Image 1 (spheres, rainbow, N blue to C red):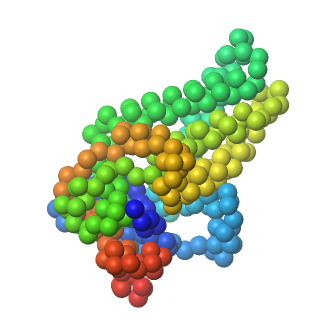
Image 2: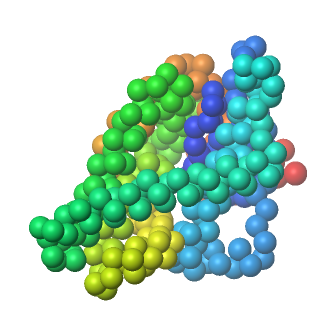
Image 3: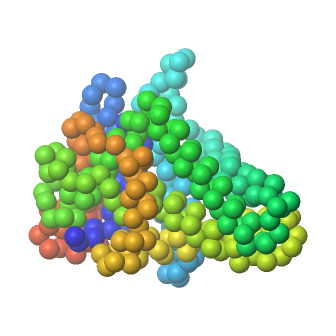
Length: 307
């Protein structure tokens, strides 16, 4: 296996693929055709500098992935009209508001709620470390229940199928096979650099980090947890980055729980879904050059290089 450096995510009836500072979104439109958009990620000089430092680069990458995820989801949704026949692509202001609300909901559900529920055990448990472990267990249960529950809906199941198509395309190329529907379908739908694995690692590392908070004040413990969220995200990024570059036993052990979770968050795609994923890959990644031995960092299609 040779790492390509490309990654992506599933969107509504499509796939986004990113190669360094370029990303492409390919969507299967209602008329059956595939629409692809290619754009460049513009980082300021300060952000580019911060990306050089461990931990900090993970925080930046996490925030960028949230913003890019919202933009690509909005683009894919624009091809499908609502009940009133209106296009659904969000404006910049609406994207900002949606992102802010999403972050607040995530913090409330996966951070504040588990902590509040763990305080119910204070009558029986006085050890702060044990309470932190109980909190972590509650957080994990809530997260897994959420992932399982949304997988039961029809629309999310299709997104999970496109998620599988995304992984299978990357695995196909990284294992040295030409990018065709047949070869992609023979590839695994599980990948160690998946965002699902990242979220699971976040859960595990948060348990370890929060267990180190020793203050007796419940309010201060909550405040410190919220302040340490970027640190947890940064550490998790370094773990997933390390594991994606090697196949030693430690890396495989670190990512195996994420692979198990991908049995829920990825599904086997249909051939037409694979076609969409291939279109997204080919828009930003020269897979033929990569298979021929070209360095992954310079594997851009000619039209992307020209832009």
